[in-house]
Picture (cartoon, rainbow, N blue to C red):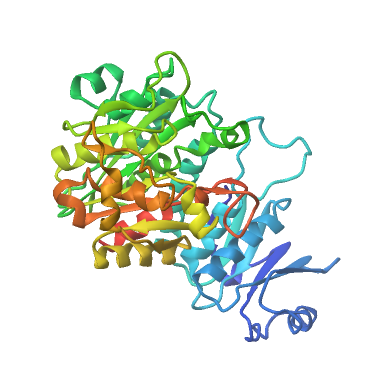
Length: 468
């Protein structure tokens, strides 16, 4: 990612000058006449480039910010990152009233690329520096950097192919990422400890793989914190569907099935980087759901942490089994004030809400609104869905406390949420569930999103935690 820093407006001496354009508003009249003439035709959207050979600046870029809201500034930052990817340094004239945090997040996230083979061998320069000429706001810039770093971590973890991304590998990467921050502590449960402590859901799902499961517990505990929030993220590092095996095409992107775990650990490290005055514990239950002689079967009875049992009718509904263990552990042991889980849980989420919007479930109106407001501020979309209690009967089992999957084929996302609610105990009215499978992945570049893992949820969680 490029460096973003402030300079004094009097220091501007740029080869490439970027000028944000708000729809319907004039540009500063001290710009060169040819630039002002070009701006007269600009709509306030997209990027236009004015070459000025033999002059300085030698190139002026007009970047639309739409109506000037946060999404417009974020998209403008990403547009600059892409349009100047072959330029080492650019200078941006920052007008009064700019949303500097959104703009810087757009620059940093829009410049993200994930490659295992190193940079493309074309010899072209890369954007390394963005200079902001305007009134400095170091707090906004620091928040943008910390948020982008945390989102980048989540994207990197999610993009990593699953031949490398074992549960053990994931846990080690989180330990490395957390190491620089005082106040962060981490505990990793291996299969032996999981068995000794009764995490039957995680062990069942991971039982078909030679690469055993893990439970990562990452904690940020600043002095003086008065609230404790637990964040739980689904961490299936690859999902074949198990014995209920997926078709080949449905497996291609199953390296992303740990996007929830990536988001909660990224947000917790981001909370430490920002010094947020709230205690945060991230729980990332990690497992590979593979097919083998030791894989769990449809019809198996699984005993979760705390003793509750599930009849597993579909081994491709494995995420809720590992989340159930983590939720039960959080409620019984950690005594949080609030609990949030993020999970790439159901395809039904995408059927209902499309590729860009996550499903939000909560029994508490105020809690649901505060989370949705944070998502809107972050540029991540959620839509509240009903926890329809009259559907609870469809989770009844003749053999266990619960069926993990309803025999009804409809309302898949709602039924998964109702199943998880059974493990929230006394915290049910202080719990948020987010089904975010679809928006965890982008099929193409769009604004601050780049093709591949989006790191969805990190930005929302950080804004929500800050508002607490």
